[in-house]
Amino acid sequence: MTETPDRRRRKLHGRRVGKPLKPRQAALIETLLPRIRVPVARDAGGRVLPLDPAGLFGRPMTGLRLEIGFGGGEHLAARAAECPDTGFIGCEPFLNGAAKMLAQIEAGGLANVRVWDGDARDVLDALPDGAIDQVDLLYPDPWPKLRHHKRRFVQADTRDALARTMKPGALLCVATDIPDYARWTLQQLVPDRRFRWLARTAADWRTPFPGWPGTRYEAKALKAGRVPVYLTFRREA
Image 1 (spheres, rainbow, N blue to C red):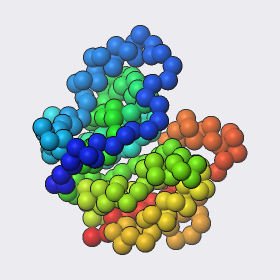
Image 2 (image 1 turned 90 degrees about the vertical axis):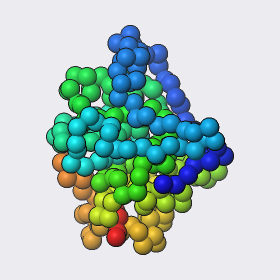
Image 3 (image 1 turned 30 degrees about the vertical axis):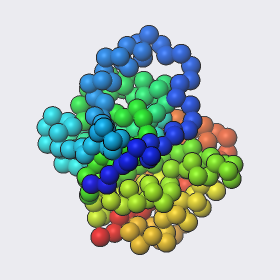
Image 4 (image 1 turned 90 degrees about the horizontal axis):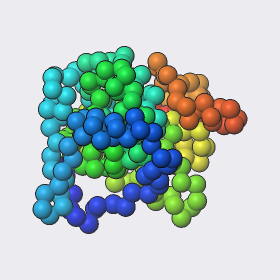
């Protein structure tokens, strides 16, 4: 387990709240979220305490998937519905997005989803080695300004955290409509022997992931004329 000292309590950039929540959304934040929130905790020294994935869902699961920045939650909800025996952890610090996801969890009776309304890196710090079967990073904030590139999710430290927590053979799926972010991701991951980019032809990274339900952000990107890229990496043994 990687210890996380207090100095690594990172600043979380970006908005936490947008428009005022609707009464039903606010109620779900108050009632449902505490019941299904991932119990990330720290000791007195600020170190993240180990998290036992087997105890998160109240029953055994056949696998564990992590979605980082689920936005409005439409992809996460669709995947969780089609794989009820897989446990899903969704991370989204934007409260309005988390509220939308909670509404879908309630409406769909999705007992296999747990939510972390904070920094996904906290969850990665808490998970044990080799816990994750798949990671989805879909349309992350590209932080286009050069001085903000250090805020991009795919960095050396998160690459190490992903490599530690992903099982050999686990998949990392990254979708983006920003060419520079796609290049950045490839530059970060391709030289790392722990990850293998699975594309053989251009069609592989132009074609959505199998069973892809799409997202509302992607629909906006397509309407604006931006072309999505779908990058799949495998965690090598």
